[in-house]
Amino acid sequence: MDKIEIETWGNSAGVRLSEEMLEALGVKIGDTLEIDINNKELVLKKYKPFTVEDLFKGFLNEAEETSPSNIIAFPTLDNEK
Image: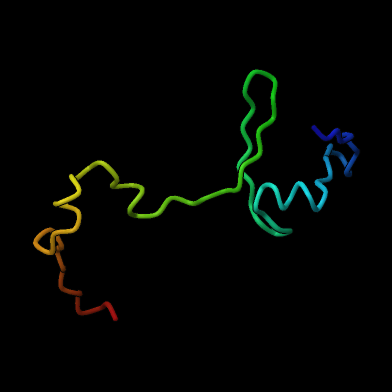
């Protein structure tokens, strides 16, 4: 287990992550992290945005999800391109 020190950054506090820590998280500079505090422990995870598939996961069973009959195409309006 690595130890890191909390440092002052302007009016805030921050920690620096080593290259090894970034690699272990599978992230790089500029990526977004998800932060969770659980029982006074800080947990950092690589942020994974929800996809449309994630939002509807479990809503339809697997056979229905892949069936072309469940795809509905709506016509565009005259003012849409």
